[in-house]
Length: 502
Image 1 (cartoon, rainbow, N blue to C red):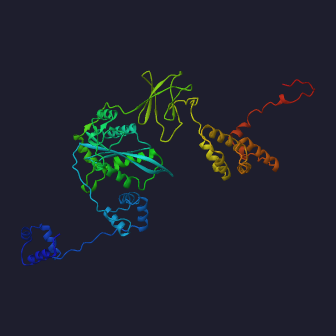
Image 2 (image 1 turned 90 degrees about the vertical axis):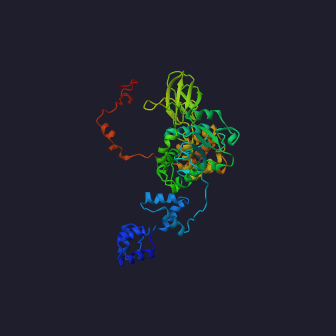
Image 3 (image 1 turned 180 degrees about the horizontal axis):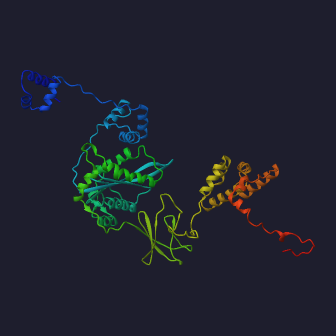
C-alpha cells in the first residue's frame, strides 16, 4: 500500500511535467500503479468492503451448542448443509461478538518432520450414542508424522488382536509403512520396561517385522513425543463427533473412514496449507512398500461340531459342511472366519455385525440348515418387552417376580407370556394386579385367580375378530367353481342299519 504523502508527491511531479515512465523508474513503482495514482489525483482510494455476512444469532448459538463449541465443525455445517459461505475468521469473530467463544493464546512445541521416518499410534476412550443408547467405544488412530494422513476406527473393546487388525487394515489401505511406530507404554505391545528400556512382546515384534517397521515406546510422561496423534484425537473430538449422529458401530466406522481418509486428507493443515494427501504422495519414495505376501492377523480356535452340524465361535454358531461330526480348526480374521478340517478349507463366513450374538450363520445363497445348534440360547427379551409394554400393572408384576437369573427366569417369562396370549388383556391385568397385592409368584396360582375372576363376573369371552370382506377375496371367489365336499358318509341310513352309505 502506497501511503498518502507519496501519492500526493507523484501527482504533483506529474503536474510539474515529469513523465510516467520517469516517475516509475525513479520511485521504483510500476507504470500501471503510477497511472492509477494519477487517475485518482493523488488521493487515497476508498476501499469498499463486501457486504457483511449476517447469520442469525439464534441459529449460530444453536449450532455452536450442538457442535460442543467447536467452530470448525460449525463452519462445515453452515457451508455444506445450509449453503452459507463464511470464512473461519469471520465465524470466530461473530462467535466472540456473541460471547460464545474466546481466543486461545497457548503455544505448542514444534519438532522437525522427516519424510518416511515414523508413524504414531494411540487409542482414546469415548462416550457416545448409537441412536438413543449411550455406549462406550475405544477410538484407534494411526498417523503419518510427515504427511499428516490419518486412519481412524472405533471398537467396543481394544485388545492385542484388535491392535494388529487395525494396523494391518491401515497399512493395507496406505500400501506403505514408515520405519518406526511410536506408541505409549501400553501392555498391548510392551512386555516390560518403559521408554528406551521397553521390551516389545515377541508376538508384536514379529508382527511388525513382516511389515517392515518396529515399535518404540516414548518415555513416561512424554506424551508430546507423539503430539501429532494427540492433536489428531483433539481433532476427532472437535470436528468428527460434533453435529454427527450414529446408528451403530458400523455406521460410526463408515463415517470415520470417510472423514479421516477423504475429508481430512484433502483439507489444508493449519497455517502451512499442507494438504496431507499430496504430501503423502511425495512421501511415498521415502516409505517402504507393504510386501504383497503379508498374511492378515488371525486367531486360531479348535472347535468340535455338534450333532446338528454347527461350531460355536464368540457367541455365534457357524454351519460346518459335511454329514459327520468332526473337530475343525477355525481361523478368526478381522472381518470373517474360515473353517478347516485336515488342512482343507470347508467354509468361509462373514462375522455378524457388532452386538449380534446367538446368531445362526449358514451358507449364503444355499438352503438354510434345517436344525438349530445344540447349545443355542433362546432369549426372552422380546416376550418380556411385549409384557412390559402391555400395561403398567403387568410391568409392576414382572418387577416383583423376576428376581432370578438364568434358565429359571427365561422359563418363567415364557409361561407368563403364554398365559398372557390366552387371556383377554383386561382380565389378565386384573389378575396380575390381584396377584401382586397378595404377593403371589406361582403361575399356577395366577391361573387359578384368572378362573376365579371368570366365575365371579360371569365373564363373556369376546368373539374373535373376523374380516367380513372375506367373500371378496380371490381365493374365496375361485372356490365357488370347485366341487363341494361329499358329506353323505356322516348321515345315518334311513333303514336304521349301522352301515354307512357310500
